[in-house]
Image 1 (cartoon, rainbow, N blue to C red):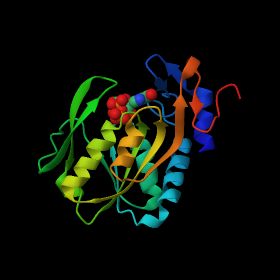
Image 2: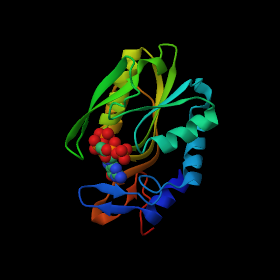
Image 3: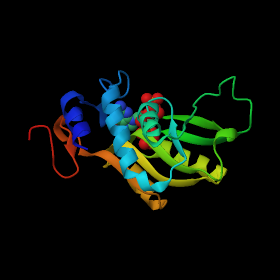
Image 4: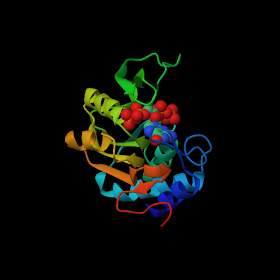
Length: 196
Ligand code: G4P
């Protein structure tokens, strides 16, 4: 998606440890128009799939997910990282290990909101090692809901996440695919890079 790639080149900052800082438009300050365009693109890609629910994980997955849900006219459910006092019903839970933060989170979704009749589209902002998406896939498995696909805004294609999702037989659509951060320059799969 050219709009997103251009924005990454314009406002993204490569940090040590292969981390891309995009808090100008995605992870802290959010550009709603860009999020709307991202939502439109996911909705276009999965238009034929009769999606009944979008599933994401807090916090930064919520913005692209909610725009996708708005356009597809379906509810958006986010897995919580901390149990809220309002979560009194039975839960589906999964362990999510963050390689970036070296922390383990048990994420949870109220069983009331995910059913075996659901056709789920999983949305997230970043795909790195795929642990977050893997946790969401496990939650859908517990609910016996069908996962139609995964939509990712920014995929770091040099990490394991994309392969992990495809190995589970799940369709993956990523709007910007980063091949490398060599010399602190963002290079996309297919060749486009900073100085071109
Ligand atoms: P994984 O889920 O793909 O395995 O990712 P990993 O454990 O490596 O990363 C954990 C967190 O770091 C996730 O957010 C993920 O979105 C984010 N992340 C991974 N790589 C990058 C990167 O290059 N840039 C940025 N900005 N974030 C990255 P999180 O902890 O769930 O945070 P949030 O959604 O609450 O913001």
